[in-house]
Length: 128
Image (cartoon, rainbow, N blue to C red; front, side, top):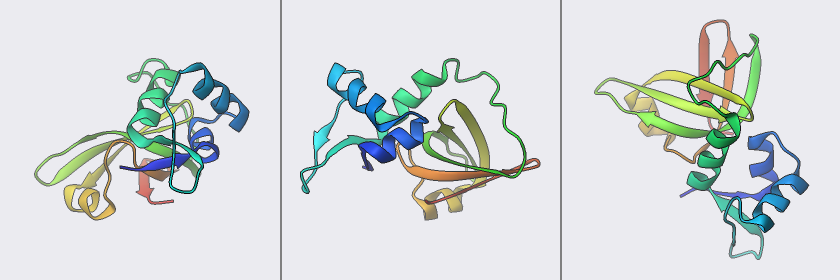
């Protein structure tokens, strides 16, 4: 399971570190302390909050071409050959079709941190 330090989680959600700390303190998202003594949140918890913050997950995700977004995988719909990967980056929901082999090679599961690059009609997903 992927763990995010609070600053990385805040960046994935498009909010400040202080905002995320307040949400953790208020119980909006659970945190725990890692082996290094730092507060972290789990990938699945972060993915759920990202979807909640974005509102309607089926709504439009307006982006312009040639942009790159840090985000978190929120859903993977696996097929025999092609899989659909949904990424939440702040208020933006991005959907990409990748070969299932690529999904497995990258270890894309809900909660995984990724960077989605958008150019024209293509969305490229790679690890940060």
